[in-house]
Image (cartoon, helix red, strand yellow):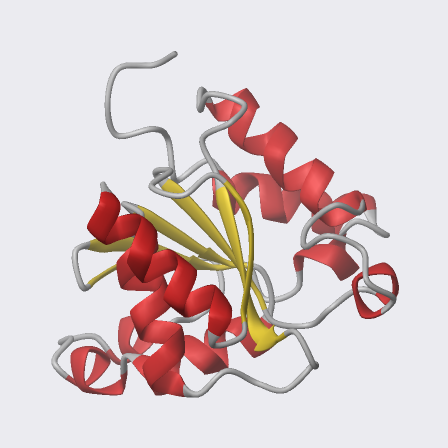
Length: 172
């Protein structure tokens, strides 16, 4: 436990922006900060975070069973691929949800070698809505969750994609 705490503190000290609960089964990776987050609001504290947490709970996840990670640091600069991968590994989720295209691009860069080994081009490109097994995680790109909240059809599409990620253990 002390080792894990030290790793997470080091990652935060190096600029990673995190929220939620470490070692949760779901990690929400956010690429584009909201207006509120640019102004200093906590990661995933806006409408997109609320909707994602509600969706996870509707799928059977415990309300606290999520962590969030931004692809930017405290100054708004993109995390380098090595730090992003290190942060994901330290948080150790079984499921990684990339909230937007920016997050998917960051994962493509950080996991390029792993993705190149996948047989399917669609999987290797992390196409939106496709669940991919990557580095021991289920990975799903939503392509633009925050923007989808503005349109009923887009929200339904996001829900259909998220329903592919039920909890892996017993339902809560």
